[in-house]
Image 1 (tube, one colour):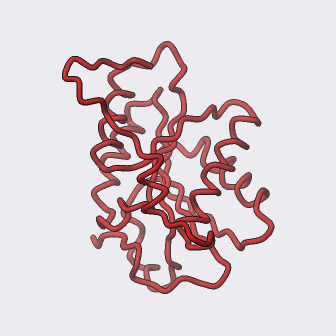
Image 2: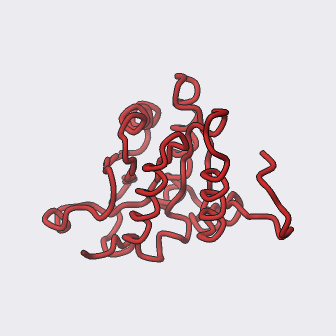
Length: 185
């Protein structure tokens, strides 16, 4: 299997491509539809995948992917495991402002805190943004779509004087240096 590479194809004029990766696909379709509805100035192409790697057969036809969003449901251990496996299919260039985690279910009291802690450490080690959202409400979906859309435009180079790497350095997640640190959320 070949790695997904961020710079192997040229960008298209006024076009931004996003890949939403979600193991369970319950939130993915709602988010994709909302992203497309919110954007009128730029041609947004949304690709959906359950996991990586993507099929090799269509690699030549596939357009450049400007942003990869891993949707992680904390209520599902399989969602976190699938994300960990899929991350290995990305070339390191995606970890420079072209990838983020979108987390749902962080407020649920029945979710083991170890899952959130594990995801926070993963995001910190990859210098990647960790966005929390509510997937059960229309307002939560709209907010998540707007945040992802803003990141997409920057990652695609459609915002003057801004780059994905700069944005990533501003909003990345870092784990406190204190060795006794516990999940304080």
